[in-house]
Image (cartoon, rainbow, N blue to C red; front, side, top):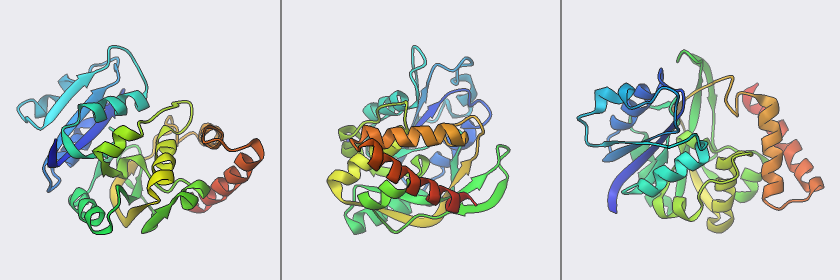
Length: 247
C-alpha cells in the first residue's frame, strides 16, 4: 500500500453525462491519486465514456456483473484500493482543486481518521444554487446523531478504517451508518468549512426524494440499535436540522 497515494472511489450508474467531469476533478487534485470507477452494471457501459482517460494509468475501471447498489460498489472500490487514503466521489459531483491536500494536512495535524468539507449545492445542469451547506470543524458521535453533516462525496479517510467499517444496509443511508460506526470507535472527525465539493442535486436520488430520505434516516437509528421512541426523538432533531440546512 502506497502511504502517499489517495484512492478515489467513484461508483457509477446511468451517469454518462456527468462522470467525465467527476473523474477529471479527481485527477486535477495536487496529490498523487488513483481513480477507481466501479460501474454498477449501467445499461450503457461506462467504459466507452471514459475513453478520454484510456491512456492515463491512474484510472482503473471495474464493472459489476449485475446491479449491486451503491454500498456494494463503494466497498468493491475500497477493496481494490492501493492507497493509504480513500476518497469517495459520486459520479454526478465534482471537486475544487486543492481539496485532497487540505484534508490530508488537516488529518495529519489533528490525528483523525476521517475528514469532510462543506459543499455548494448545484442544479442538475451544473449551475450553482448559491447555497453552501457548512460543516463543523469538529464532529462527534453526538453531533452526528442529531443530523448527518458529513456528505459522502466530501470524505477523505484512512483506507484501513474504510475496510474496518464497510458500507452496509442499502435500505437506509449506508454512508450515515458508516460515519456513526466510525465515530463510535474513534471519537471525533474533522471538517473544513469550505465548499470544495460541488454537489449536484438530483430529484431521483436518495437525498433528493425527501420522503424516502426521511424513512431511510429513521431506519439508520433503528439499525444502530435505538428503540422506536429514541429513534423518533433523534429523527425529530434530524428533521429540524434539515429544515434549517436547506431553507
